[in-house]
Structure formats: C-alpha cells, structure tokens
Image (cartoon, rainbow, N blue to C red; front, top):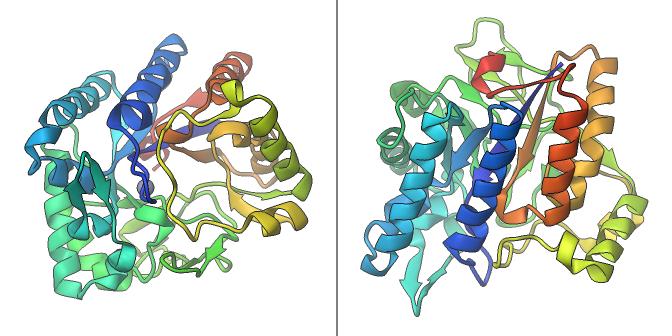
Length: 323
Ligand SMILES: [Zn+2]
C-alpha cells in the first residue's frame, strides 16, 4: 500500500483569514519534521492566489519571503508541489492588516472561459517559478473542479496531467461551492478526457482521487466534544475562520456523511479504517487530504504514530509517483 498525504497550504477564506505564521509556516514546519523523521514524501498545494496577491502588498513582504523560503525548503527536501487555485483572490483586498475575501467568484467556473484560462496560466507560472520539478498536479480550490471541459486546454498548455480534486460520493452545491462526485468511478486512479467523473482510457489527464469515507454522526459528536473538553490538543493551529457553506453542523450530528479521507484534526483517526477499506476494494494506494491550518497537536502526534506503526508495510509517497 502507498499513501500520498497531500496538504493544501493556505490561509482561511471566511471573515478572518488568519495569520501566515499560524495557518501556514508553523504547522508546515511540524509536518516537514515528521516527514523527515520517517523519510516520507508529501505533496503540498500552495495557494497560488495568495502568493500573487501578497506580492503586491508591501506590508506582506516579510511573510511572503518566509512562505517562498518554506516552499523552496520542501522542494529541496523532495516533496512535490502542485497547483492549487482559489481564484476568488482576484477580488480580495488587503486592509487593516488582514485579507477581506469576496467569494462571488469563488471557483474558475464563475469566470468567463478566457479569464479562467489566463488565471490558470498566471497562477501556474507563479508556483512553477518557486520549484525545480515540473508542476504537473492540480487540486481545485474547495474541490470545485467541475465543469472541467472549459478549462481543459489551459491545463494542457501549462502541463498539468494529474487532477486530485474528486472524492467519490462527495457533493456540495451550497454557495459558493458546486461539486457533485456522486457518480465518480470506484477506482484509485483513471484517465479522463474532459469530465473528471468519466473514465476514458484514451484521455491525457489522470484523476487520482482523494479517498472518501462515510462518517457516522457519533464521529462528529466525539469531534465536537473533544474540541470543547480539550482545546489544547484538538483546536486547529490556524487562527482564521473558514468560509461559510462548508457543511451544516446539524447534518453532521444527525446523519451519515460521505467526506474526504483527511488528516485534519480528529479526522486523522479514520485514516487507518480508510486504508483497510482501500485494501478491501483492491486499491493500491490512498490519497489523503489535509491542511496545515487545520493541524492540531493531536493530529500531528497521530500522524507521527501512524507512520511509525505502518513504516514496514506502507510507502509514504508523492501524488505524482502514483501515476
Ligand atoms: Zn484550498
């Protein structure tokens, strides 16, 4: 079994974006220490919009320098860097020491095709300029990769060959999100032409989906109670507020929910079960999503223990090595 831990490296997009230090730099340093200890390779998806827009704010110069330095550090340590696009940055403004986000153009499909194409080129160029290897993997901001067809040519032009935005069974059509992965193939990878849910062996793009898992209401009761009882271990390290529309607390506490397999906070406790499920399905690998901003003391300790426990039977690899 191979596991690719993939980290979306970004601020928050709600009413408080949080600080670069708490949301990105600090937790990522902890992740890099864990990776080094276990000789593991991770994949990072830095938010290209942040990098572009912080560059035009002189008061962000110092933090931007640290972010660029961290990206170069992980690149030199052999971790993969992918393209992560949150195009709402086009409308973001910096005022009173914080970013104000307007999410009316949250996803690439909210822009005209020509504008979206230009964004893909500009964002890819920004990330490519920081790393040595070719940036070939893509993850859509907020999983909003559909419809893919209008963006296909632009992705071909910049050299993207892998998408890892889909998770089987995932669905969120509440504004500003819009994705529906109900009909995704039950596979750990497949080629496609212009629809991320339709396998086509002649396709030049490869979908390597994030694994998915059906979480019970009991799981969320535990998650919320632990957060209240023991914030020191269970509170996310990032100091911002998520964008609205992510999920209703009532729904999580009262019914089963199919969500991504992820390494954020208490969710990491299900990676082991997800791995067993993947083996059962005959899958050869598992892609796990995570966010430095959502790491907790508990999740980092659990990640360390998990890697120690499975070091002889699991390879911890980059996303593109699963090609
Ligand atoms: Zn993101």
